[in-house]
Image (cartoon, rainbow, N blue to C red; front, side, top):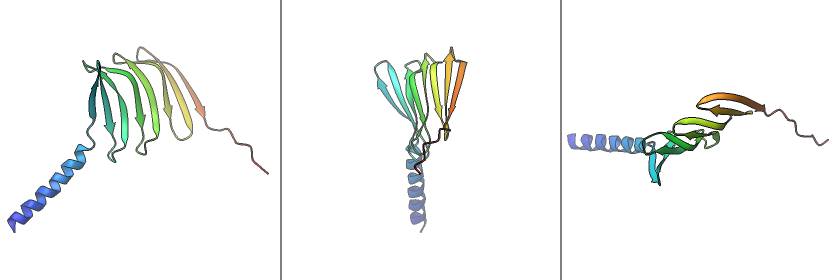
Length: 119
């Protein structure tokens, strides 16, 4: 009976560890950069982007919600936020312009346009 209980505990803990490992980021070397992919608890990609070999964020990064819908896109240069970043939510798009990791300008567009109705 004790052996059966130990085997059951081992199997349950093994399955739990396996499920948790699916959420660990994947890291792949691509030239002079490391591509990182992070996951939500449900296995859907949460974020993708690149690091330099010395660990600084570099290039384009993308974020996604738990359903896989894109929520943000932006760029880094040697760990600094640069250029235009875009953030999406249910009814608006925000454009944030960064300069040396500081917000320079923000524009927001709301989805308020009504489509012509057919009478």
